[in-house]
Image (cartoon, rainbow, N blue to C red; front, side, top):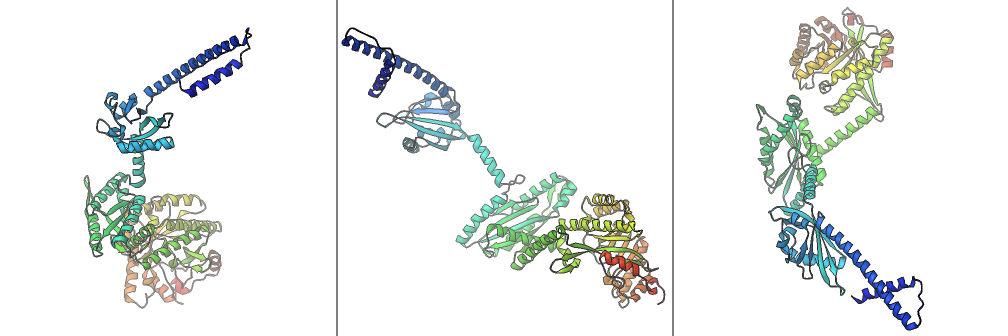
Length: 619
């Protein structure tokens, strides 16, 4: 027994003896002898208790050693394995007999080299333990990831007597972490890098480009009309089309280029160009790849794209700004007709920024109630009666005063704000019609509706809800004017919506008829009630033979299709008389009245008296 252990037992025995009652003997020598015997007996009892406790601890340790799910191995002072537990063999595939006497660093299943194992043990000697992740190769050749911990047992002199290793297989955690990383950095559908991954690569490429003097092209690509594919064939077919686009793009990209998907039908490309002259050729290859049909079963789909490009380091901005600049150029390509490539420039950036700021300001104006509805009267040229009004939106700007629609409506095209403002004007107009009806005044009020708003799938349902919210309005007192000069992209959908609106009892007419590229097609396909001759044809009616002929033709077309015809922009008595002679029944314009707020309109209605010429009578 080592001296420290002996001294400890002696001290404990003496302490226990002191607690016993004293015994009386005949002399001191016998007394001392008996004391020594008692102390020795107590020491034996303590040793026995310690042995029993140690045996329990050993049994517990043996149970843990045998049944734990973690692999365990023990090394001697030379660093050679002297024992392993069953979990060691189960995890590594190595039998106990095959590893006894070997150095852990010689076992590929543990993923540590001999020199590394010695370093780790030395670290454990001074810091209590070492822990890390290692990759090893199991006996069956499979790679696994282990979380390994090493500890040491010292002798009395402080030298390493034993090394202890414990490890668990965390391959499933590594696979899960890899899957999380994939989900965080790659697109689920296409497997392409996502925005986060693209920005990382762009930052790395920018650093290389600065060192090597290369050019980078950041390209923002948006598919044109992809929504139509989803609407016609469903989203599953749309996903297959996106995979087809991805395949086509990948065929023209090099290993050093990057393609990423960052939205529904939006992609970004990063082209590394050693020579600036290579840029146009590379972009042409990209656009040509998109022009190839995508075969999906019995369908062959064609897609086109608008692409915006910015070049680094000419555009010496950070990664996020470069992508934003390319996005702005793409947006401009959309505005200029789609299916084209446009490069970013400073003027373009300023226009795009102004566009965004104007949209934000218009949204704020709608929230803060800065818009107004003015009404322009419409008369019957046959008797001069006021038969209706046109509702026209104005912006009461807090600094610039009352602004006409031409100063702001262009910024709303193809945006949700266009629909919101259109519905607001409808609501305001229906409320005013209801008030007029309560006063016994029946005036048909017309509201301009953009084709984009009309083509919203829920448009007719929203209109029905608005009518239901104004029970005092007969639907026939509301007229929708579709701007003919704007493009109606889906005639079938437009025709279905117009039919539904007319079923509600609402009138529908074509505004600015003759100014667009598809006037006759619209008249043929849309079941409308009326036509409005644009003021550009009426203005020179009495002096321009061509305008006179066009007006006459529109009036004749209206009669042939059973449509009421209204002339806009009537400013003189002569124009009114001539229109009446040609068969035009209704008119509006500055010569009759300018658009005005409703309070002034009420006063105007009280004093309006048509000149005899308005009634087709001599003055």
